[in-house]
Amino acid sequence: MISAQTWSDAQQLWDFQQMHHEPQPCSVAVGLGSHDLGVADATVDLYRRGMFPLIVFTGATSRTTRDRMPRGEAEHYRERALELGVPASAILVEPNARNTGENINFSRELLAGRGIDVSSVLLVSKPYEERRAYATARRLWPEVEIVSASAPMTLSEYIDSIKDPRLVLDMLVGAQQRLLIYPEQGFMIRQEVPDSVTAAYERLCSEGFTSRLVPTH
Image (cartoon, rainbow, N blue to C red; front, top):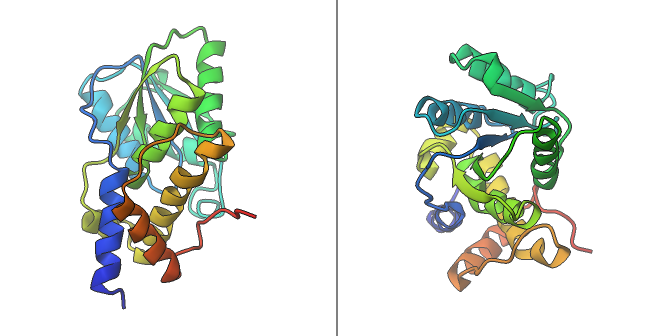
């Protein structure tokens, strides 16, 4: 049973991770691979709205996705987009990235290798990783404008779609930890984190939502 305090803390992290950027036309979209096909759906929706002419889906597999996406996250995203009517000519696949930094670097290299000029990127992620994705892209791809986007969902709607509350809370905590420790390691830009968000994160850690934390020693 998850307590009311735990839900409140999770909501704090969820709200903080949302960047609330208004989608705008960009040179390209980069859909970040994950366990969640909703990222592909959100990317397709933005494509239909004319926000970009080209999509890069990026991602290999991880311990979370190797069973449900055996052909690789980016390839499953591509298949989903094709099913939803996006032409194959509008999709590039980057199949090797295994973390957010590689998602950004490998997508940038793929586009440069194709001679595609990029001045702005609509970065599509899971709702609770918007800020982490943005901070990483700003650090690794500073010369382009970054606009963050995700499926417009509440925390409860997202949990209903994933059907695994524990996984979602673990992922929320993991995303928040990276915002706190990765700037010092050069993986993302530093952002101001309100004390209330840090306190919520620490309470969730103490409650055991720690399976997606990275070692710090």
